[in-house]
Length: 425
Ligand SMILES: Cc1cc2nc3c(=O)[nH]c(=O)nc-3n(C[C@H](O)[C@H](O)[C@H](O)COP(=O)(O)OP(=O)(O)OC[C@H]3O[C@@H](n4cnc5c(N)ncnc54)[C@H](O)[C@@H]3O)c2cc1C
Image 1: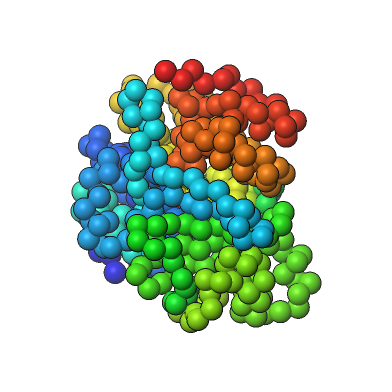
Image 2: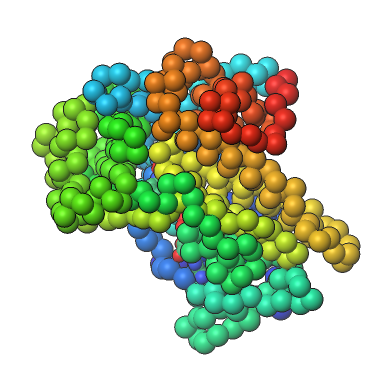
């Protein structure tokens, strides 16, 4: 249970809706600038959350925030990369976690696999320890003044309270708080909207030996049918299958039966690892998770992470976008708060354009993977290894993109984007 803060200012510089990674990272980057936000979270932490495998860039952000030793103390498994198994279980390709050095060369690095209940609680507690405040409550409305958002209405245990602020950050995840309030554009369906994820945790799965034991494994069956295998501790592994919702519905099985059946038949390399397993968590599902929201910034408000977009979990980009967008949003907010009272139409327009740029790169990489899996494998393995490694690590913004690999993917997808080729220094 995380302690709430009771002595609050009359007007907050920044209020953040939600207490997940997008919220905590935003708070941590604001705190680096001396801005102390108020976080409003409705759930009691720790609470279960899916999204356990982190990209290399998230590892870099956690180090930048000085959190490496805390993560090591929690013994979260170390991830060196991702192995993707082809449908016959043998045709694999490997993407290592690598960083770009100042001279542009690639160098090995690592990131983590995290149990999100612990990870999210740790991040939120760290933000509070560094100066953020927390109110437990359900954000249920916004305050507005002359077209600008200027506060939040929250249902707390003490009744409904109003909290004025200069900037409201929506980090409410898939609940898309500001879209529901009609402040942003509406929530529109994404390309993977009809997929369903069915998942749990197991003991007894066979891992790769030594250093590789913490890596993510992805098992491909056929278009839009795949499974993940993410080590969460010495013993436990997160396991999940993702399939078209119709396929699951037509099976007539319960989620438990379907998961057990699919794990046996999806991919021989996966089956071989699961001969003596025991489920340690209930089977859960996620559906309708693919969407985007347009116009997600404006006077007095900005959305971060899942609150405006989530595409698909296949390459573990969810927490990455939360962390990176948090960093960019915090910089933009610092800028806005430092300016005079004069109002821009949208002081966060540049932030929004950069977020869309990165999200589109990943959307195209994922779409290409499903449309042309063999070409993707060739590019990852042979022709564009460094550039695919960049994408997987999360280097998806204008400094690195669109790379030749992404331009090639877009050409094959017949997709035009109004992005200039990246100038790679
Ligand atoms: C099947 C599946 C597998 C995934 N696997 C991965 C993976 O391996 N790696 C990865 O990086 N990502 C993965 N993701 C994505 C990842 O789960 C999300 O992208 C990530 O959790 C987004 O963080 P967030 O902080 O934006 O939202 P969240 O983590 O959802 O946090 C939002 C918070 O806001 C709170 N909230 C909501 N509404 C209100 C309100 N009105 N008032 C107060 N509080 C509110 C919620 O209680 C919640 O705590 C996966 C997603 C799915 C669907």
